[in-house]
Amino acid sequence: MIKTGIVGATGYTGSELVRLLYNHPEVDIQIITSESRKGELFSDVHPHFQGLADHELQPAYKVLDAGLDAVFLALPHGVSMEYVEKYAGADFRVIDLSGDFRLSTPNVYESWYSKKHSYPQGFEKAVYGLPELHREEIRNSRLVANPGCYPTSAILGLAPLVKANIVIPGEIVIDSKSGVTGAGVKAKPTTHYSNVSDNFKAYGLKRHRHTVEIEEQLSGLSSDGPMTVQFTPHLLPVDRGILSTIYSRPREGVTKNQLLSLYSEFYDGHPFVRIRKEPPALKDVRGSNFCDLYITYDERTNRIITLSVIDNLVKGAAGQAMQNMNLMFGLEEEVGFTALPLNP
Image 1 (cartoon, helix red, strand yellow):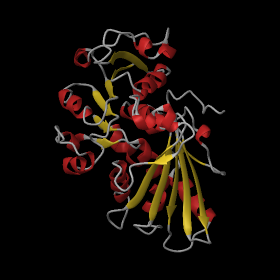
Image 2 (cartoon, helix red, strand yellow):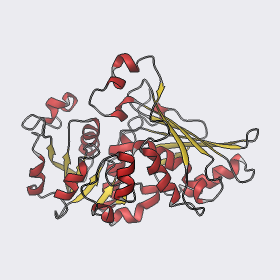
Image 3 (tube, helix red, strand yellow):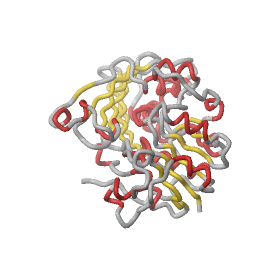
């Protein structure tokens, strides 16, 4: 059994990690931590786990003495880096779900997150945890930087086109919509019910921090050098899910069948990417680790249109983290993913 710990259990991501790991046949959840709720039961914080996961919440320092194999950091940006440094000499592997080690350098991080990075050495060890691009590196890593939810949908939607050098750099527009759980569990004015219900809004225009994450990963696939994208996120009045509509311009005319062949070949052997025959909806992936892609070409406007749909809490966070754990411990990627999409 893989002995695991979850640091930061009171948020949506920590809760989703427990839900997924609970059903994993090779995992034993040894410890769940919370600084603000230590001493309480995990099921007191998340009552739907009553009788299933009644772990007493521990302070995070106890992770070091728990004899663990893997630790998930479900902590905010700017906080995870402190724990990665504390755990640097430990025997267990770390999967960090924050943005603290997703980018290429501390300088890039500080430019986009407006925060001094306290553990720059971690960038030398971290592997970007998108299995569809970095499967072999993830297998051998001791620190995986789990991707952001928006970048997961955008990168998976664009990777085949960029790798094949089909699209014109600088002509990519990513229009993404997310449910409110993407903003975290803490209440904010923008996520209050009265501001979300019957409402729809864009935010983070021009400089959302996920923009550079998308650009860096796509640049690694491109033979044209650095990629620039126009990324705009929107807040949907739903609880979970991301739908990204991506527009790109091909270097020359293509057909839908050519695009389908390209995507099918690129994602052959990747169990959680499904190429759909019809445009997917949020409920087609709800509660699952799937990324559903739909690809077509508009001859009239000479644009490729890609739809990419994920559950932001699963493939966009906890599910991808468990997928990475499977790779790190030599398991098949699908192990433990027992839930089918919940629709309706």
